[in-house]
Image (cartoon, rainbow, N blue to C red; front, side):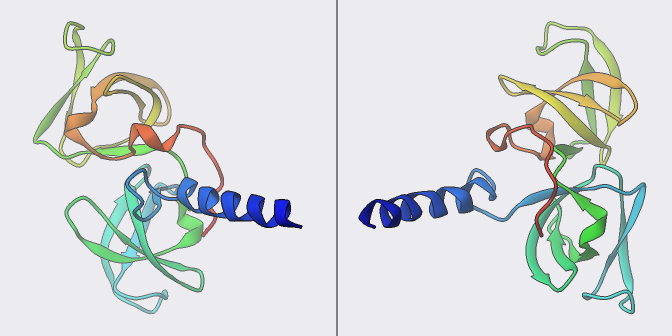
Amino acid sequence: MKTVIFLLAFILPVQTFASATPDGGAQMFSVSAERANVRSGPGSEHEVVWEAGRYYPLEALDREGSWVRVGDYENEEGWIHKSLLAKVPAVVIITRKANIREGAGRDYAVAWIADKDCSLKVLEAEAGWYKVSDGEEELGWLHSSVTWGYSAGAGLEEQEAEL
């Protein structure tokens, strides 16, 4: 009996930590639909305050029924239906422009340049660099310092969001 209690005391806190961000904060999700309405309250009768595109990363702040209160990198908050969120690693560009390179490092050529607010799916992480995709093709490597959302300590496996 003592063994079972000890194991439960150890496993439950680990499970709770594993579902949170590395700093112990709220869970990170990304938009799974092409476009998603973020509303002023938990319900479709509430006003749409902004719209988010596929792979836009959001931090879960609260829950009410099937609705999740979310926040983004600009501290904008709103409510989104949980069916529009997924646990897919994603980032958004937070600088005016960001170089997407052919490899993980500044020595690699720039493949293309992404604009602020461009949201991308993270495929791989390597020493502060993220291999990113627009969901259809691999685009290259992006330095984590120009992004918000996914954190390399969170793990890359795609999993169904438990909201």
